[in-house]
Length: 135
Image (tube, rainbow, N blue to C red):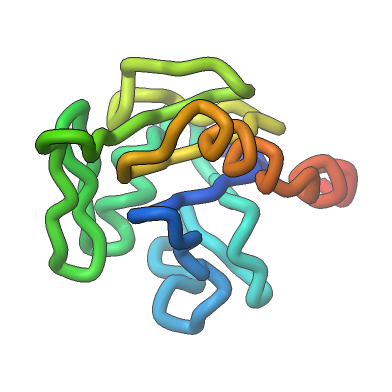
């Protein structure tokens, strides 16, 4: 079905935030994408779309063990772990998580401690409501 949802998102790999405002990440799919040079808000134009759809649209993937981006695999090993948060809470759905309007999503891969994860969660923008208000 048709939809127009907006979600704030941050993806961190080894402590570095991925800059989805870069042209190569913009409008990668007509159904789920970043647009207008904004890299912090996912725009979805169909119901039932997941975080997995977003990563696949960027030629990547995500599961409960690995995140793949830019042809690089970042998989759980030793102290480095993949974590997925929705609205501040740890979530184990990963690629199967269906995006809802105004969600705040964090994908974090690395060896961060709880304080560092909290800083990443705090870095998620609150831009989605502005786009949802526009329609």
